[in-house]
Length: 66
Image (tube, rainbow, N blue to C red; front, side, top):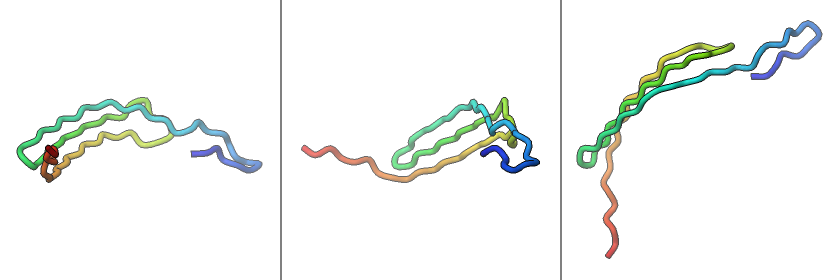
């Protein structure tokens, strides 16, 4: 975000947020499952939030060439 411009504009602090969280991942055969959780704190000029992600991936491992 930038400061407001113009003769009647009031300066504001820039957007700022800190985030802390954890992430867990586990592979079962070709399936990888991940769960992430993040909590915002110390937010200025923006929304404070809690984020949770569930990720599911599918794939096969590459075989090494001999």
